[in-house]
Length: 48
Image 1: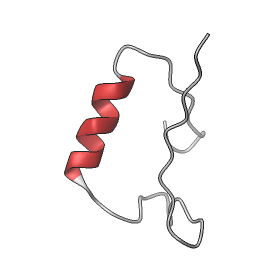
Image 2: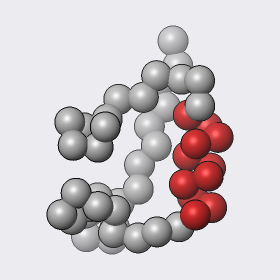
Image 3: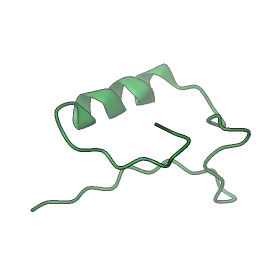
Image 4: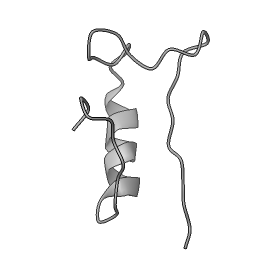
């Protein structure tokens, strides 16, 4: 089984604030969708 991590963090190791991403990058979101579609994704309880 292959396990792949897809992670986006700021330089000070923050991943979000107030249940939102710290940035909006449409190309990154599109890429995330392309590489995760059809696969199992583990998310936090608030992310889902």
